[in-house]
Length: 227
Image: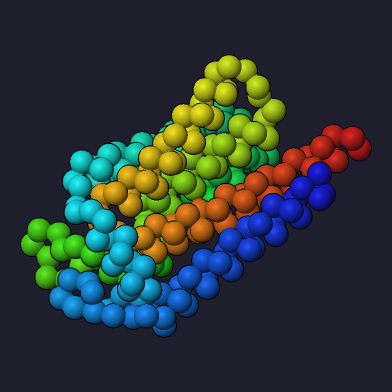
């Protein structure tokens, strides 16, 4: 298990390094005023080429909105298990440690969202109704939310060792939702493609990091049981 923990930790580090490299490229390479109100966008040729493949599709934007809200709801319901266990036992030691790690993970997602609302990397390729300036768009918060939350479910299911038909069906559904979120966000036209790529890279870093932490937690708990 030690090798698997290190492997997942390395993958998380590589994905995060790639995410930081993408930020550097977006801020410094091929920056051109191709956004609304001539806002400067990095990797402009790539972004404009993908953007030029289609118009804004509000149906896909609403679908990805729904997927994001469903992901948030699923994560919230899962985390409700921790306070319920605490109320039953009035002991934090008896609360499932996996749930506590997931709560910390989702809290980190919230901090990341706030951070990139303040530290603006890119602005959206469209103006919403009533706006004079486009909103921050990097990384795509919908992509990060769907891929990270649903990815965390896949990690927990995978580490549980459950191989029932229901578990398999849930895993397949999670993968379908994540693919829909990524592809749908690109098709919707409300993001630059680099926003989506950034969201995927950050999500991979977070999910593999979570997997490494949960595996280390399982190893620690197994070690305590053997004593």
